[in-house]
Image (cartoon, rainbow, N blue to C red; front, side):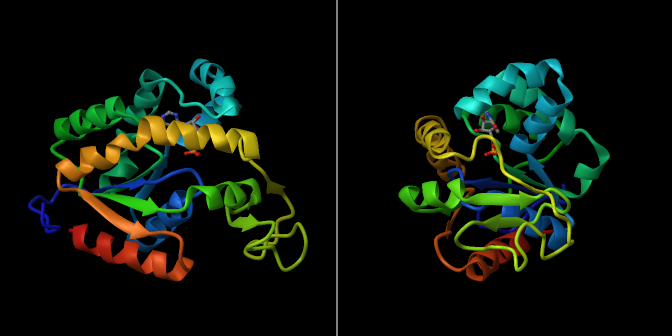
Length: 228
Ligand code: AMP
């Protein structure tokens, strides 16, 4: 894979990296800029938990412990979402795949629709700093803008700079001990995907410890190469 596309199929990008690496932020940026759809299995699972569905009930305690939800549940949720018409413009997978079984299932799903992975972008970060980064983060419940207790506070306390809403939310699993479990899960079960996508010639590395604008620029450049 030399970065140039041989098909007109909708692009498929994967964002890989430990919790807190900025996958969600970068996926939302790509969604706005390129009209791709962000598919976050974390968001889909949180919605399933909130709806009280069977999948949500099975996932709730696992997510609160910082462990990975079973492959069968996550693959089924992703398969349903991928089949929706808006995904026809191309997708950015944020938080999926997280195991080799999920990566193989994804290859299978894509090949059924004549698609393939264009790039797996690895956001490289320093783990220890990730714990600080995640444990302080919160989000506007109105528009989804992300904030941080230390690195990015709203101009007016508890009020979103972007939409003015006063409903900041914190994820239940963004506390120091759960973050450590999530990092362990990443190293044990997800990091083998670096070799998996390297072998396929799809891995692209981005230094994700620097300024957000620089990280964004690097990711935009990689994405431009795979847009039809
Ligand atoms: P995230 O929002 O991506 O950080 O995901 C939050 C939590 O949802 C994770 O800690 C897991 O418990 C669960 N989760 C999200 N995506 C997956 C996945 N692909 N496989 C297994 N569990 C997942």
